[in-house]
Length: 244
Image (cartoon, rainbow, N blue to C red; front, side):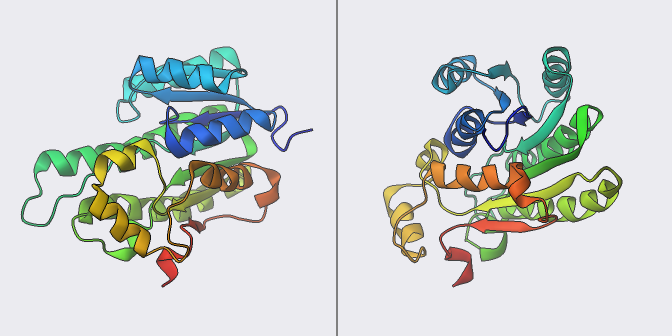
């Protein structure tokens, strides 16, 4: 029997990278998974890759109507949620002095506002004793030049987790933040040029970036009863980059 046998999981931004690897791992461990993505083609490809026990719902986690449609689908098909992995996020390097309103609104609109309403709208379907976790970033503690807005938006998730676990303690719902470092994903390929990749890899003790499957293994830990005594933490999965 898998570690998530009979569980229902929702993963936002689940069409690529760490979230897609996590969705695949959750299904392998017995869960039924709902994933979201903004592009139908990418969503269809992800559903095909996962192969079974998955429903794809097209939508933007920053759009409240899309979130309503997501959770209406979950309610209609399964009627409950045991695991919520709020992973949808965005980031772009823009240095102080060049930051625009659009840049700020895009990062905080999805990473903070979108995460907040994803969690809030999921709660009526949530089983007591469930697990909520969000995707943070080690940028929130490292001070990488150009990433001040992105880092600040991810730092807000730490505060969310600490407050929400207290508000949800009567339902025994755990709230944590999974904090990856540099991971070889399609999004990172778009954001970083080759020189930036080499610079980031030089900060990682083992000298190479993480793999989505390595993040998925930790996501499984947070989703499962293995982490039953883990609550309100930022769990860094960055190869030690934030420690040195």
